[in-house]
Amino acid sequence: MQPNKKNPVVLGIDVWTSGMKMAFYDFEGNEILSTREKYPTYHPHPGWIEQDPEDWWKAVIRGLDTFWKKNLSPQQIMAIGLSGQMENCLLLDQSGNPLHRALLYSDSRATYEADLINQRVGKKRIQQLCGNRIDQATTIAKLLWIKRNHPEWYHSAETVVSGAKDYIIYRFTDHHGTDPTNASTTGSMNILSQQWEESIMKEIGLRSLLFPPILPATEQVGVVSHNASMQTGIIAGCPVFCGLGDAGASQIGSGVADLDHSHCYLGTTGWVATVKSEFSIPQSEGLFVLSGPDLHQYLYIAPLLNAGRAYEWILKILLGDKKKKYYEIEDLLSTIPCGSNGLFFLPYLVGERCPYRDPNATGVFFGLTDQTTDLDMVRATLEGVTFGIRQALELTMDPTIMKEMVVIGGGSQSKVWSQMIADVCGCEVTVPTGSSMGPCFGAALCALVGMKIKRSFSDMEPLWAQGRQFHPHEKNREIYRNLFQFYIKLYPTLKPLFRKKKMAMDGRDL
Image 1 (cartoon, rainbow, N blue to C red):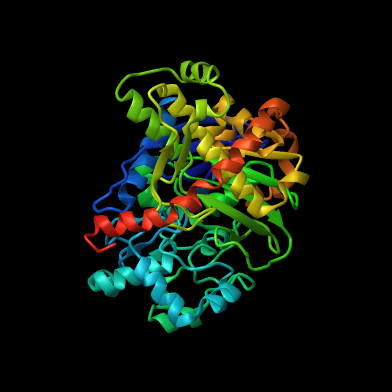
Image 2: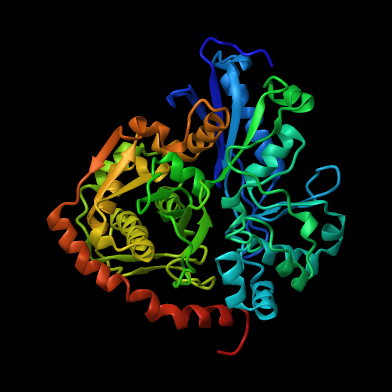
């Protein structure tokens, strides 16, 4: 590749749940251009959540076409780094063609298979080796479901893809690979050695050769092939770096490089994550531990299946096709008092994983009256998610000693929501510049470090210091402290009813 020394850039790509985020950054980490391309999610049966990997690739092509139309030159692109949703399951044949649509992390069809793996291998042994529990969302549970229900796919497969960005890497380079953060979510990587744990796969009858090499985030997987160049416009030979699963990319993209610091991600899903230097088995069933971007660094993460998903849902339900500008909703929400006039919301629209692992849990409004307004319902939805963030935070660290939390993702653009998080969690909230593109920035940073343009992930600290700060309001903090104590009693009270509802819907005797 012939470099263009005038305004060189790196490309960061994030294959997120609702669409493709792409951004170009200069060598100092400043965003030059960005775009977002949407693609559909399929729900063929209750609990089944799928996406077509070809839609991911088409979104990349559309996004790049947008950049070319804005006069960005392919000659400027020095490297590509990637991030994306984790814990998926997608099988590719010998030619690299998908054998089916990707089963997403939130897909819950593999409950039986997860139970089977836990029985055969043992829950304690799995955690000792891999760090985490196996549930219906774990990649190897889904893979076992495919083997049992679609053996023709399984026996035709050459490779299993668990990270969405790893499929895009393959389309760019014709090479397979994944990173330790993403591999941590599969239920089949040894958390200490960062190698595939073949003993587990053997015990449950899965082929370990299906799993791709585990590579450091800053390692070059390959270069853009001639075929990919013809499709995308990027010059053949452009280096492509492994990057990170979205949790790891969000960590470095938010500037949380130091130990015992936390960040919160608000996308369709969300999480609260804290960086630690030592591995220990999570004691809470809602807490996960992932290999971090740096060696001997661990990311303790409390994942939320319902974050921006809940906000988008309630706006769609109440507004439908009516177009209301974002700032107008923000202004209106500011008129509703803390506590949404006595309305509470459990945001478990697709079940939940943290603070409770319960695929049967559903969304619930509690406290509806004939005085409840649509704005009460919208604010209660945000408060329900925010109370969940507070519960997640308590799993990763002691919130009483935390002074600051960085918030990134699309939801961080809401000033009302950011202030609410500060009030509920009782800490200062920092929303960095470009926070909605945090994983993209993290992906681009992997390329910059891989190219040795930057020495380490913490080399961009001055840029992360920019942004907005939200300080907890003492009056609101006290109100939310009391409301939170009531909120945390809702799920335990309703838990047996969630199970009985599922039995009733299945036609079983209660």
